[in-house]
Length: 429
Ligand code: GDP
Ligand code: IMO
Ligand code: MG
Image 1 (cartoon, helix red, strand yellow):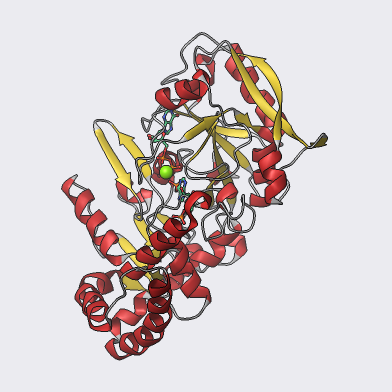
Image 2 (cartoon, rainbow, N blue to C red):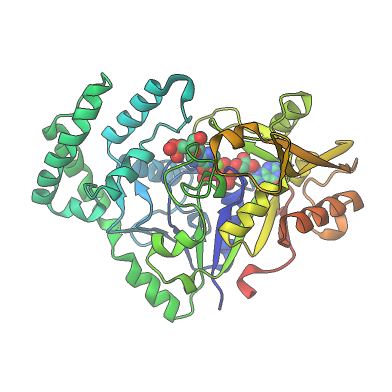
């Protein structure tokens, strides 16, 4: 019985939350394996809209949600999110949510450093969410992070804070930012500990049992391949590996347990934050896509940059992300456009490329090479079967499949949960 990993194939906000929520009806556990509360997923279920950041989207379906060791967890943000969704009637208890004991914690000093560094970068800022994601991952690899399990050991916390504050206060001072007092940080952690610890366990054991019992697992990625710290548009990326290979490492299962990799891509392209975006549109069409697609960040409220579908980029994401099938979302946003463009490669200084090279200068200079296809005048919004789609929309999808070298196995035609067309069940593969 196959498991499924869902990852973004562009720069995030492709509709992963909606697709995970939809697929979760077929799974028993939904596992986040990377990222933190920089993610923002909007799920529309009837007249309820859920906005999730750190909680696995499967919780809305009443499934067990797991926050894996690869996630960076801001305990205060987590509790606030739990309180928020409880008000909407969602059950989030230690019976439904489990957090890996070896997950790294985000502390207020991480967000302070994130923001101080962005301010110091000025014009060259990355446009981070300012939530401390990067600094927390840095502490993890530097072996000084505070992890969920440490909350149970006050003496360990105290020792670790000495090292952590020595490092961070020196940096914060250098940036002219406020420093942190050990007693205040320790009190903050000890105050949160009794509310976080009931959720904490060695989740790898639960996942191993689930695997052996044949229970289906759905691995929920945040961000996207082009924001991957290795494969993305570095340095304009997030600080974790967003590709499906990291689902194994960030959850504590073997690579064979990951199963079918479903990449999510919008039928056009968006990006928040700074960095290269070859197909970005600065014209009326870009504005129209943003307006019709409600392209505002779930977390930041920032306007998302919009552009044409970049098949060269998604093809690259398919290869490095190991994507077996694509879920194409927001097809409805393209309704009524006379003509659509698909980027099939780049002109960089007079040379033609089929992929986006890694060097920042080349990425900045990349000019898209377009293929033009006819649009459709009919509405696809809310379509729930292939038969309801106009011929030109089907042609557009078929051309994308050819160019990105992966089949489109799922289509989404509105924010609403059930406005989804399944061509191939990823759990059956
Ligand atoms: P995620 O970060 O990948 O989970 O995506 P977000 O939730 O941040 O952003 C996707 C937005 O598009 C959300 O507001 C969704 O409700 C919405 N959405 C998802 N699928 C569709 C679709 O097929 N059509 C339209 N119009 N909106 C969609
Ligand atoms: P979901 O899961 C879109 C972007 C930020 C910034 C860069 C680094 O909703 O798709 P960070 O705070 O992670 O250090 O910021 O990554 N970014 C996202 N963009 N969707 C997201 O998540 C993102 N998470 C981070 O805008 O450019
Ligand atoms: Mg999002």
